[in-house]
Image (cartoon, rainbow, N blue to C red):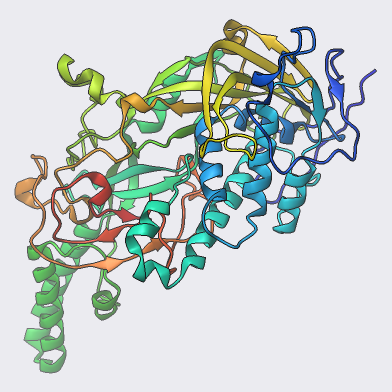
Length: 563
């Protein structure tokens, strides 16, 4: 009889997590290591390639992970992460940076993923990673029993350590800027999502905001079955909102009210107040004429008590502006009954091995018309350009949850990786090179490891999906754009056309992204938008400068407004 643990608890941060922790039985062909087994400092990925022993002694599977009582959520996440070559390359690059910092999470995770990649018939406990997370005051305990929450915790610690290595470089950034740039490493999980909010009545469009994310939350319908494409369409489809404050309509209404009040003052001969209101009115009219509609703290302080707030019907849309190298999709399965009770949505989702994200990505021209898509669908391009515009991903692993909302068990499916190069002390290569196997998959439940078919993987009902970008389909830079998206102001004459010219005004304000990770706003479909701060470090994906005047270079060099 297997031992099941009731894992119900009240999570103060997120009460919509699926909980799991039931231990699974060990497989007969998997040997469990001793509890005090320590991970080696250096792991050779090619050790089994040089093994000349008979095939009977060669391991055909990979290592399992011991369930310590309620750690299946941890085991499933680590097994899924071990199937990502780009993640191991990233961790190895950060590990090789010239820094004196310990980087406990980065290095312990890299070592754990290597051990889970090497063919083996043994199981072990990821004690070094758990210890590293504990030393960073992010203790893994009974309150962390959701796989997606753990993924956020690990990815957040990786970002923190990467940011700290850049801060540690200090004055060398100024003396050796070229060398430092070459050593800059970006997280494979991080991407950018473009968000546009437009007023339907006046056509005013705010600066297109770019959210930095490391995983995407998809909502399931209340149905028996759906597809991944339908979920992505729901994420990026046009949304219509009521009672959204429009900045331009508010300024126009302010001018009208000031005009009426000035008329009354002229009849009452209150000269001093009259001149004050006329000055404010002229300032507001000038801002409308030149397009300085966005909120400005200095000027708005003068309008305090006069500025109206007018709500209008608005349109809102989000699309991927920079797809990440590793796309992590979280299938939100928490739903609410009319009574307020939370239950698990068991809707079956169909997902492909190869995913083309191009229909959900922005293209070279951004559209500011309130009733038009933010960007032209890549799939509508000519056939000659269809191959170059594709953004294809390959399925590498999935996490599946069994049980109810309050308790259950997590397992993982992952693709077999084959090592081609290793940079351990016994090998001569400088880098790690891993390739995926076309058809070999593993089904892993804690210590139990079995081979499975692709059909079994695709028939599972996933809680998380991890896709890896196919390098041939997209470059590292973001799609070029012909528009300065930080100054998109739609005048009356520009409402019915695409804006493709930058403003001639010059206004620069340097910002950078903090490594702290706040909660997502209620309206955001993404988790973990990064917060603006005045830090001195720079993140490759999020190093924006807001300008009114910019050159038409690649998107990576185009100023963006990030919130």
